[in-house]
Image 1 (cartoon, rainbow, N blue to C red):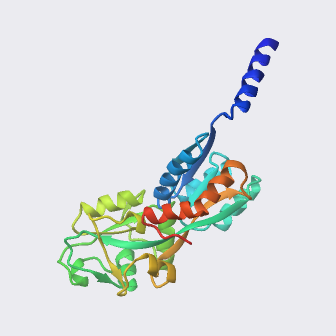
Image 2 (cartoon, rainbow, N blue to C red):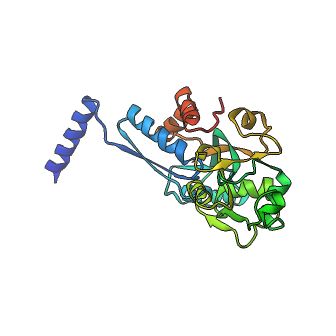
Length: 270
């Protein structure tokens, strides 16, 4: 036994002399909106730091924050601020939820490219999602029912949409609930009469992005506040980060990290 311990200590000593180290694991979970940023940042970060292995998943803002509180992730990504009840839950387990704003996002309404509607008002969006407007002809479109696509309630994107568009109204009961931005794009792109909403980083040619109150979503309109459905994106840690967690947060806020934010079509904070 003593011989084995001696051998192990010798190996560790040699590794330290040669500048080698065992890989550190960094786990990040949470918002599907923030997922493209995190995935790309993790790739670049690991190239810069070969001794670190970053594991990224996107189970939703609420689930990510819960994972941080439960100790199963090191960083929780979120497309909304932590709720008071989440902060209280964390404190009860000795976890101090500390938010780091790493990017900005605009939530945009989308529809099938074949639909001959290009602009919509905040009021019309609210009435579509609460069920007052049920057919496209009420908006100048065909006499067909509107298929409403929404996010599930654990989504930070849903919560911002609920706050800024629905303003306390309930989503119509027949809405199709999807678990991610990608599923929203896929569902709307395959249904001529559907409408949905996604983070600005998920815009692609298979769907049409609507103007809202005559305004278009862009980095400029998100940054200056003229795009009404805008929000910050966060990474949450347990208190002030240290070690590899702090290193990753610092990387996200660096020039290289903010460049990644822009490359994946979100809006940098710097």
